[in-house]
Length: 354
Image (tube, rainbow, N blue to C red; front, side, top):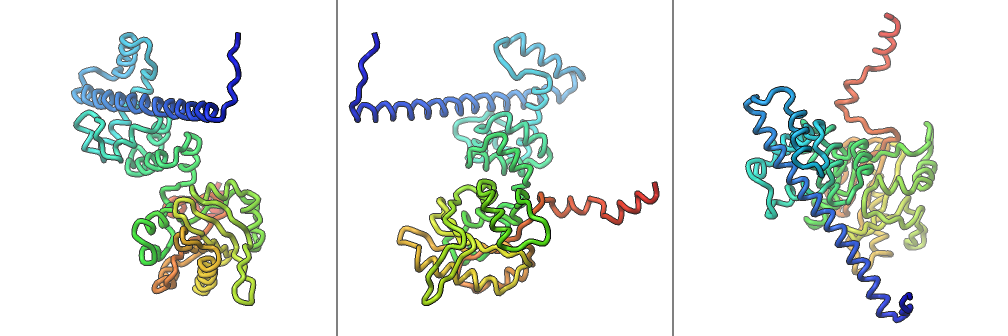
C-alpha cells in the first residue's frame, strides 16, 4: 500500500532541500575519493621512481609490477603497465616544481596550488601529461583553471587546443592604474589576446556589421571565447546622450566583476582615436545604466591588428579602464610555431625541385 501524497509546501521545500544536500554530498564524496586516489598515485609514482633508481629490477619492471599489483589487489583498477608508467610521469612532472610535496606524503594541510593538483580527475591529468610533461608550470595553469571553472575533460581539451595559457590576460590595458588592485587583477585575467573567432564563416573582405552578425549567430561559442562570467545585454545598445542617440557595438555584464563591459569591434588595425570613441560609451553607460551596486564600467576594444606600444601609449593618462586586444578568424598559432612552418615560397621551391 502506497503512502498518501503530502501537499504541504513546507514539506515539499524540505524534500527539495534534502535532494540538493544529497547531490552535494555525492559530489563531495566523489571529489574525496578522487583526491585519495590521486594521493595514492603520487605515493606510488614516488615509490616507482625510488625503486627504479638502482636499476635492479630490469626493463620489464612495469609489466612485473602490473602483474603483482593485480594479484595483490584484484578488485582494483588502474594497474596496467601503461597506467603505471603514467603514474610515474605524474610524480616526476610535478615534483620538479612542487618540492614541498616531492619529499613527503600529501596531507590535508597542503598549499592551495598543491591541493588543486589532487582535485581534478585522472583523465584530465593524462591529457596534461601528454602535452606538457616538460612544461609543468603550464600544466599547473590548466589544473588551477579546471578547478576554478569545473571543466569537463572535453572542455579542458578544447582550452588546450585554443592555447588559452598563451592568450589569457594578455590584452594591453590600463586596469592597474584605473581599478582597485583586486578588481584590476581579475579584470586583466578576464581579457585575452588574441581572441579567436574561428567559428565564423567570414571570407575576406568583410564589414564590421558582418563580423558582429556572425558572432551573435554563434553566441554560445562567442561567450565561451570571451570567458566565464559574461552575460549578453545587447547589440547596438542605444544610449541617449544629450540630444543624440549613441549605439555601442556590444554590451555585456560581467557577473564576477559586477560591472558593465562595452565591447567595440574594429575590422581594421588599432588607431588611437578609437579609444576616445569607446571612452565616451563607457562614460555614458556609467551615467545611464550603472547603479550604486555596480563597479565602474570597463571598455574593451578588439581590433583586427594592433601595435602594442601604440596601444599602451594611447592608454597612458586615460582615466577610464580600457583594454585593447586583437582577434583572429583562424586557429591560434604562437609566433615561434609560425616561424617553424615553411613559407609559401619554400613550399613552391621544394615542389619545383621534385
